[in-house]
Amino acid sequence: MRNLKQLIYNPETMLYEVHEQPRIRRYLLVAAMVAVGAGLIGLYFWLYTSVFGLTLPKTVRLRKENAQLVSRLEILTHELNRYEGVLQGIENRDDDVYKTLFGLSEVSSAIASPSVVYRKYLDYEQMGASPSLLETSRRIDDMSRRVILRRRSLAQVDEVSVQAEDRISHIPAVPPLRPDGFVRRSSGFGSRTDPVFGGRRFHEGQDFATRKGTPVYATGDAVVEKVQYQFFGYGNMVVLNHGFGYKTRYAHLKTILVQAGQEIHRGDKIGEVGNSGKSTGPHLHYEVEINGKRVNPSNYYDMTMNVAEYDAMVRERAAASARPDIPSTGDILKRKRLR
Image (cartoon, rainbow, N blue to C red; front, top):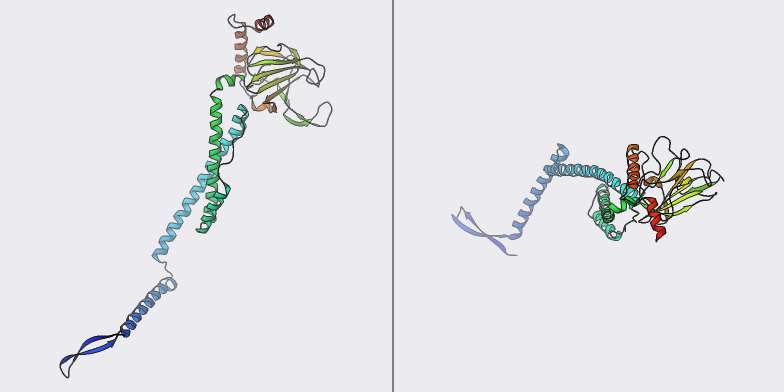
């Protein structure tokens, strides 16, 4: 190793003389100074944190940033709860009202590959994400998937609603009886005890108990598909074909005022409540069918409908049938017989 040359003044000779000093000594000196500095720094941190109980400025800043992030996460969780409630309401209305009303099928639920989503969460875990952050991420992904599904579903509803003006007039959307205090639902849709033979049976419609002779009205524009008179089963019965996959059945009638093939409109009187067929008392058995499947009729009408509005609908149809510029039921039947 090369030695360092250094000029040192000699007082005896009063001259500067050259002295050689090993370089290793300089390195050791520097190393000693670094070690002493590091020790002093370590001593400072130890005294600052352990002896005096103080927190380092960087730690204070990190703790403050962490508290802010936790607060933001809590706010985000609260907002997610609120948005999930709103989305759930939209989903319920879409499933229980729009799909039932328009007879729509479920849209495809294949949105994203589960393996892709799972790998994303694994990456988050490897990055050190907290469980609460992972849960929030999962909820956001789930809400995104549900929103996409609803958007597709509502787009389907929007497409169908283009034909709504004609379609809605055919949908059986009003009660078959005047919704006054003399009408009550005596039996609902679903499983029940058979009132005649006993045992559990599925009731495919709804029964309305009321006085014999109470007028029965068409619940939507339709063509009379079937008129039946018999002593058993449905008794005197009318089946209306509303188009768009909808049919309604009115059974146990006393009187039938329409014939097969007749075109009628919502609010037209088609018969009167009776006690014919398999019946234990005066009532109307009412069914709604969509695409060949019986569905709950209560999804299609509201028995709390304003009575005055219902009466106005019936009067309007009676007046329209009586006007000479609009063919009456009798005229329609005569034309059909002459063809």
